[in-house]
Length: 96
Image (cartoon, rainbow, N blue to C red; front, side):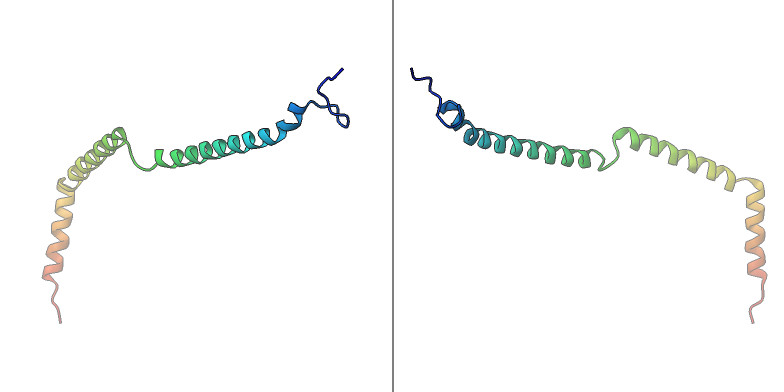
């Protein structure tokens, strides 16, 4: 009775061929895995490349608020008087 098994290993003829096919399939699987890994790493870097629209909006609002505060401080009477005094003193200083 022929069972299809080899005398040495007890494996069927189909089983003996499997490592070669399995090795090729594993190599293809590793290639796909490597490509997916590289694509994932690439996309992670791209996502953080710049600001989103919401971040631009928040930055613009913050800059406008800072400008308004700075204008309020500089246009106050104390600052204007101090700057006027400094400029007047500098112009009145005799050179030479």
